[in-house]
Image (cartoon, rainbow, N blue to C red; front, side):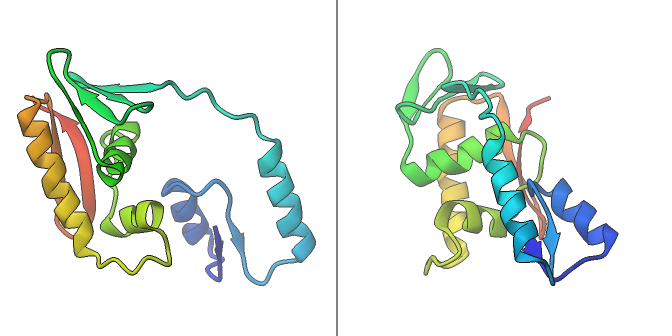
Length: 148
């Protein structure tokens, strides 16, 4: 994360929200380059081809969502959103985070596109008799939680 906010609280919040590193302005170009080099030296983590949460299995190879009995194929955006939610269970993901990570900073899409895809995912989870539910916290974000 590269930002003008340099207070310790801002750095903690940025790192807690998922930033791998935090550099505040003004910064020395040498330090930025050293941090980039350090990040590229990191070992790639093992990421399995399937993510499981509740009774759902998300297959990264074919964008298929299954519950052990039936399966359905997700669109690219649906897959990316569900992958983000399933790899971060119980963590709130804001509409802005979905926009940045999936549509990108330069996207011309409106923010309500996230709401549309959330609706699609909810219907698909219901169709799959999922033991997880896509919950919204008004004004904060979305999360996947196992049914109680």
